[in-house]
Length: 208
Image 1 (cartoon, rainbow, N blue to C red):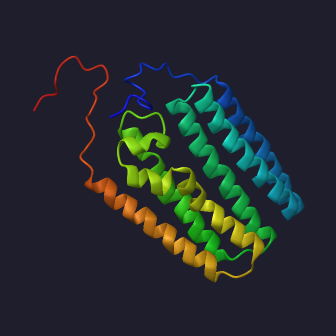
Image 2: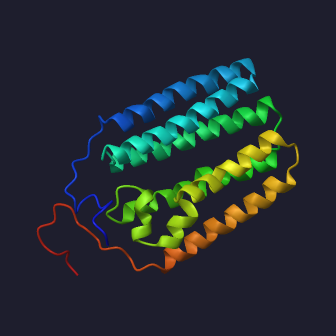
């Protein structure tokens, strides 16, 4: 396995007070406030403003983490949790403000909040800093889920179609494809050899 992205091998000291983590915290608080005001005022335009700010700052904190060499496991977990909170708030607002299709929103949240969240945390089983480096474990699972295209396909097309059209057929077909990708990813993960177990603080092998 390559050295890049391996937290323990690099002896990286985990730090909470980094610029990328500050941007993640800023986007969480700012967008949470915007989505809350949008919900209170029933303003879909403001809800969209929150989504655009979320997408922009989500890209920015990832870019800064990589360019400043400030990627950490703490930062990756913070980013993943912030994503779930903000996207869920946007979609619930969309559901009640714009009377969005309940079936599509429910299926999307099932995927994003449960299946994708579970998959996104599987990198913790290996000594990786974030899912961005999962190609060191399995390139196909990484390409389907955490490459630039994989990340966009996970939520971008659904969101754009729902905002531009009242039809549920195209979003439903995309969701079926996304669920298929997740199930295939689960299958590939189940076929991988188990990662080495590291017992932190252990001074001797465990008893049989």
